[in-house]
Image 1 (tube, helix red, strand yellow):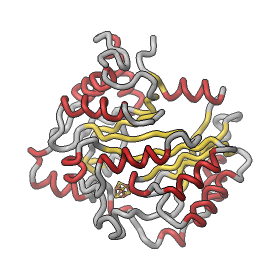
Image 2 (cartoon, protein in one colour; image 1 turned 120 degrees about the vertical axis):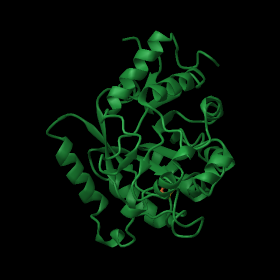
Image 3 (tube, helix red, strand yellow; image 1 turned 45 degrees about the horizontal axis):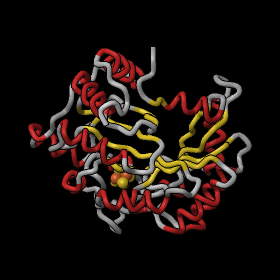
Length: 305
Ligand code: SF4
């Protein structure tokens, strides 16, 4: 089928010429929106129950985690290379010395060709940018920022404890430093509708990003949002699969043409997910629905810009 958007798999093929697998590593970080420096309790959709302040000392080293991840994937895909994905919590929120140690541990593995570092916009500063841009001289380095929304009212409602201007400022610091830049966005926050999603597409198109991940809003057990949902479910306009697919297709029509779509949805563990339940559909099945609707509606990425 003709590709009507920039897919991540094509980008990876063209960039590396072969399959590259991300291996998640937990660097034992916390989050400024949990420890009180920005806020307490975290973002309303974030699962606080999995947060264990003592796990830092108990967990395995970055090297051990990578070895285990590679041992898992290697028998399946013999030739692939790996990216160390610092995914959990805020992966730039520590001293520069400790960050350098963790990132270098990952990069010292012979099969690891780069880093993907996920973080909050307000956890980016000059020193972090200097460290990552130095590493990017010899390695493939990605920074992913949690944008989540471009509307400050929504960011406040979900207790992000940063504004969209913080996101813009963080990308300003990060751009043109040899670091590949990505972001993620939640589609369907309380109070947001179709026009807001189109506005998100227009606003993120102004950011110096190469990649974007979209996630549908999900209500996860153990979160502040789960409590809010149980009291006032009418305040949440959770999508059916088909409605979500329609919103994403409309979003793509307004998105800058060169941005690579890394994913369209998120699959939370079934036992953790309260709503929306989409009959266990996998991400690739949702992507397929998006592809089909793009074709039916004759929409291409950026066709409505
Ligand atoms: S979503 Fe990220 S920024 Fe928000 S509380 Fe959870 S770890 Fe912190």
